[in-house]
Image: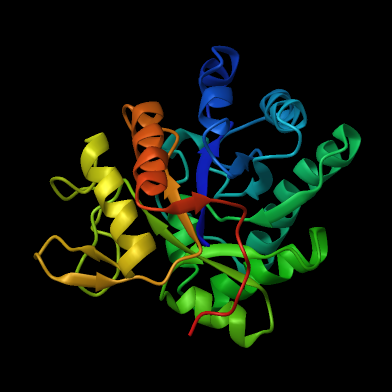
Length: 258
């Protein structure tokens, strides 16, 4: 059976959590990444999202979504930090969510860095700080990283479990990198187009790039960002598109990238 994980970043807006929008997104996903106090999120939003996981019987699985401690810029710009300071802030965020998860009877399943931290993990010293933070706060948890990235290779070389990630709602470059968010059309807001890209990734191992070429992507999970405009319609279309194509959304399988 052909399966792939569907993940979404949640708990990034108290308003969205209170309105039930994040719970609706979680109901369509098989993994959720919970903001844990860096770029967004606080104890209240973390508790609410963990309660959603409990209410749904443990599916979707819950992961930590640490970012640069820079809520004013939503963690989307690099924040210069020493390796020790970065390790400390990532460890603190994961540990905070893990403590609340244990209190709620939820077992964390993974870690996914957010925003600029996710991309900066291609730098060895950043990747190593994140890896050590995970070892400190939640040893053995796999990490979600961009398919084909240097970060994924670094973690795998260190013996860490990796879940290779691709995106339904972001435009790719031909080399498999994401187009910068500042580029026109870099965020895919059309549900049909997002679904088409997800199906290509899951069934053929590529997406069509901004240049019209095939960007090779070997992924165990596909993401729709919770803050993308129309995210609920996007995620619903992606899930339905995958199911029509014979792909079953299911929990991720950590592996080392090739």
